[in-house]
Length: 250
Ligand code: 13P
Image (cartoon, rainbow, N blue to C red; front, side, top):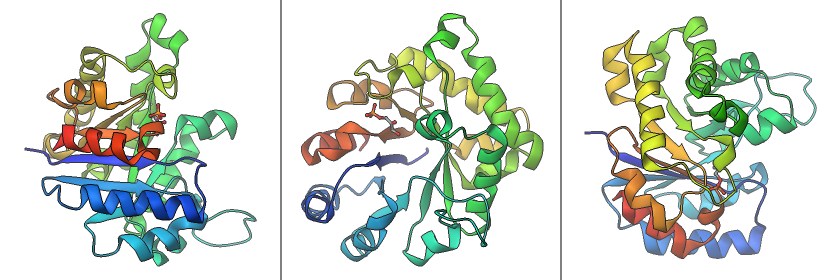
């Protein structure tokens, strides 16, 4: 039985004062939920705040990106070891908002994935198709290719210390989530891709669904066999809604 994992992706929201309130509400509402794991991925400048408020609460924290390089003259980049300095345990890799706005290639994403693991961070690898790709029926091909970039380079065993998040691009921030059947079908495909190379790793791999998860659809989504939790954007900025989503997983 895989333990459910709920990850908050705050994206570029918050400030010191609002974060303080939100994290305090998370601690009050979520610390007693014992049978799920919760991770909050905050903007870089707030890692120290997350660390000071969340340590010893059972809620973990992480980042939304990292550099593909370990150290060096890379202005504006943030390395894996810097994230570790602030107690981060997880890092989101290849979010579609970055892949499109900042032209991240699958190759860069694969390098970041390994960079995170080499420094003891758990990468949360985002995969997903556009609406045009879904309507053309090529969504498995698209997601398969995203996974293959990593599997072909490093082998499927690297997924033993990773999380995959299926985030159909058409569902992100649109209010239109994938149906539980659509999501389950893709999650099963993803697990199958890893299983084809490494059964043991595929059995323990956590595959999260992301894209307009709300209290209203969370129960149905999380009830599916291959959906091991969620990557939550908008609703993670509201402590009540986030609590309901976490409770749906618990
Ligand atoms: P929303 O929950 O706002 O649709 O965002 C999903 C997402 O992109 C999480 O990474």
